[in-house]
Amino acid sequence: MNREVVLAEWRRSAQSLRAADLLAREDYPEDAVSRAYYAILHAAKAALLVHDVAVASHAGARRMFGKHLVRTGRIERSWAKHLGRSMDDRLMADYDAGISFVGEESRFECERAREFAERIREYLLANGLTDQELASERGDG
Image (cartoon, rainbow, N blue to C red):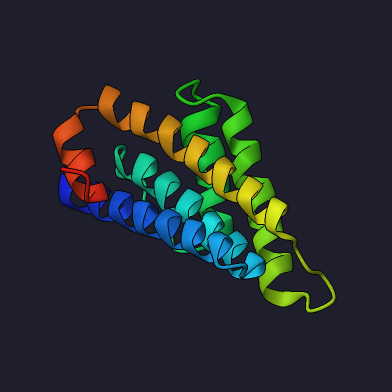
């Protein structure tokens, strides 16, 4: 495992989640939904990188998350569903001008991203990263 790369993805996840929260508070729901997805994507990539699995696409991240983390029993199946639903919502938010999200929906997406990130945080801790490393990457310590 390349710790630096894992932590870089973790940092991007935390940054995207902070941006999603800000956008939801400021009533930019589609943008909040999009950033919440990126928080999930980068957290998923961090978990994959623990096993030196790098991905180059969104679909690849989804596929490899299932293959390397869910099918092996390392991560529960429900978290793959979070990734998939968030990806679908992000596609609608970013590319379907006929779809609009309301504040409550964007706050729900932020909460889903926060829960996903917390599960991945637990996974990273179980795989050799420390509270201090993860907290400092969030800007908390």
